[in-house]
Length: 106
Image 1 (cartoon, rainbow, N blue to C red):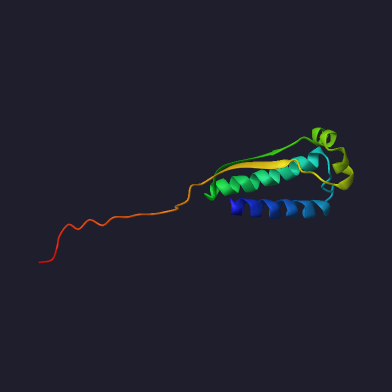
Image 2 (image 1 turned 90 degrees about the vertical axis):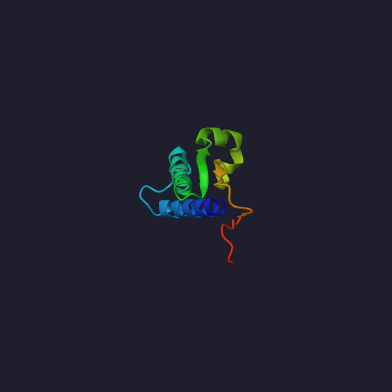
């Protein structure tokens, strides 16, 4: 889960920076949200492939809905509508093993 969270933040930050320098630039609109959602989903898919999580799904609140519910966020450039639901792998917390003695020395 830690890997997923760290990688999501880095990938989204990189997408915003790279998108700001592209033509056309990444904008705060539905296309921009779709782009960031796709970047986040790719990282989530990688986490599944690498065995970091069992499953992960990214979702985004649509641009119009989010701005209707949070009217002050648009002018501030804030979008808190991305989310990721992930199911983590069960790691070993305790491992026991037993030794069977099949022959004893005389």
